[in-house]
Image 1 (spheres, rainbow, N blue to C red):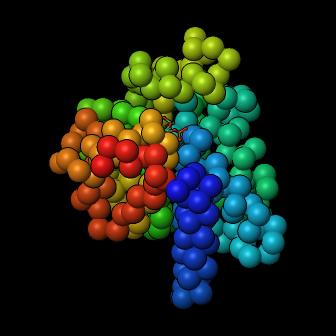
Image 2 (cartoon, rainbow, N blue to C red; image 1 turned 30 degrees about the horizontal axis):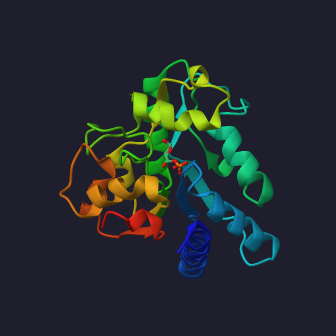
Length: 242
Ligand code: GLP
């Protein structure tokens, strides 16, 4: 019905996937989790923290890769995705610092930074579960409309629409960076499982385009129609156009 219930469902799913994986693994490979920022996953992070505090789940054997980061914001900047992730999630769980991976938006060589990120993901044997949100224009991570569906981690220029929508997290719109480093649609598609959170009426058209029309590089989240194991968890308001 609502974003809190979506958060409950998704957090239970993540807990189950991690516990099931650790129970059956035959070596020391950790569970590899892809994570988003934004308001949509906040109820999930809140519940996972509660579950951790209640002793239901540990993140000692979990490695994370975040989807994206703004270009030009230092990791300690209060509007950076680094800061968002540490304040809302990582600071409150037992994850090892070296197991957290977030693109460096201050990297001098963006091309190298993105290539290293892809290589790092591969070195862990890929991502087991990629959790994502969705922009009102159907973007996934920062794969704006017209992104190649084969794209890998790279720099993207943000659309004016995204800058306007994301300005709610900043003091004013002029502070919103115009570029970001982001995993590609191809990077997300390579993960073993994809779970997208879609909540609120503002996402209704994007949800319709993602699942009821064809795969399109304009609504990049629609690529998940081609994924072998993908799930959308949405609330009632997001289904308004279905
Ligand atoms: C940003 C992020 C996306 C996120 C989207 C939606 O553009 N790069 O990863 O899915 O915002 O955010 P929200 O969940 O706040 O609507």
